[in-house]
Amino acid sequence: MSRVNVPAPTTTSLPSANYPKTWPGPWQSITDPQQIAHPVAAVNKKQYNQAEVTPFGSGYLADQIGLSADKPGAKPILRGTFILEDGTQLLRETKDVLSYLNTKSPFLEQPFPVTIEAKEFQATYRIVKEKTSSSYSSRHVGHYKAAASDDTPSSLHSIMMSLPYIIGFSPTCWQNIVDVMLEKDKGNPKIHHL
Image 1 (cartoon, one colour):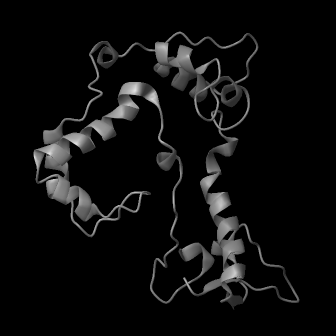
Image 2 (cartoon, helix red, strand yellow):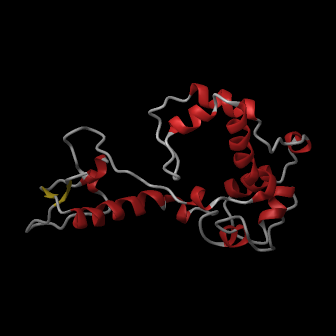
Image 3 (tube, helix red, strand yellow):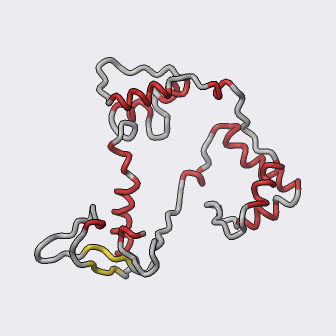
């Protein structure tokens, strides 16, 4: 991105950084890459934190479950045994969600396959287009497509892909993302049109 348009301050009103969609005033272009990052980050922070004010994003349930489901209430919810503390004030809809989560699912009684078979790896990468964006590893999709054409590398990749499920961990590379900002409409770099 080489330019972003943001609300420009005027003598009669200040720009509302929180609501660029409804900004009625003039716009200004920012072309300095260092300065572009600030308004884009501010808009993204607002966009990506919309759930913060929800019951699972902050407050009692967030404290009980944790952002990474690592607090004491997480396992009881998965087991269907979670009990609200006396006097906990929650909306009826939130209580309904908790009640649903506490319902035993017949699917939980069935074994869940935790391994990815070489044939599954091959079938998946045969249909993936080579121009599809790749993983955080920067390994080109063509690498996986080539590996899918032979049983030995397919087996190696399927084992590596299965390990997080078998052992129960989240690879560091799965915990980071790169969010590339693109114009929704070419030639319209307004901050809320990215």
